[in-house]
Length: 306
Image (tube, rainbow, N blue to C red; front, side, top):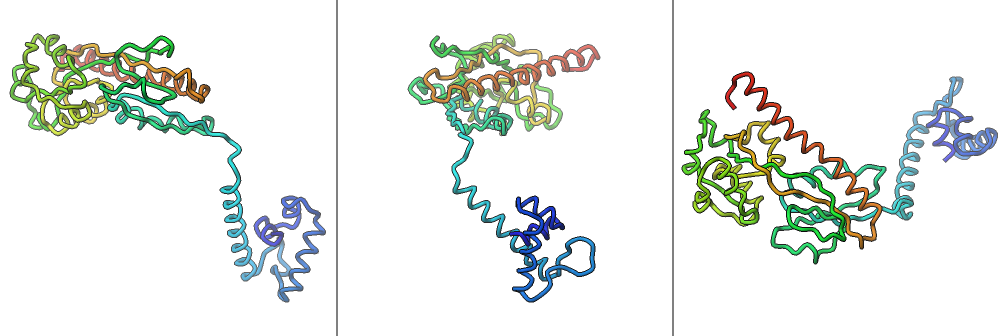
């Protein structure tokens, strides 16, 4: 160990400080090793402790061996930091397309927390599920959970850019030809948007019904029809031109999201920290809507079509 330290630091004094022994002790050990090996350890008449080529290779091997021993010991030693483990439940599409990709921002050295996300579907009885933190969309939350409002969705009708690749401008009368999509798990949203657009709610009868929203979303991306979506989920796709919002002036209010910790959770402090963190992310969602509204206003003032 003393040889590797002297070679690495280039100094007997530095090695002695590192090993918490005296300078003379290191020198004595070097002399004994040199006598035992029957060969010089360092290049003579040079400033600094410069090892010979053979000793340099030996020191490198020793250094790697010490590193591996240290790693093995660290694996055997119980962690001094107890990591909290949080079980999160959240609506499936929200969890897959927004929450899970964003979790890397929550996991920092200052927050030693492991998270497991369980996506839920509308028919699920979430009250029967074990959880430390829950995020719910719409519905009533029992008061004992002290729910915290996160944000309210803004809904708009969008289509895949595949349907407008030739520069086609979509009019309301084109929707019957393009086709409408509707998720069974989000009933009434298509009809609400149609009425806001001055169209017959009866058009929902011709819509292709799909069992889950994330399936309907994939169908829209594939060009199967128009879908009413929460704008925060597709804003990036809009900016990249992958999705088109034919009627950006027609946006309607959707359900509200709420977050809360389970008062029965054993990870109360970590759960409260997560609730505070996700609440701090809400301005990001509001900013997306604000940027869109600003762009529409600027285009209108410039006389550009929206």
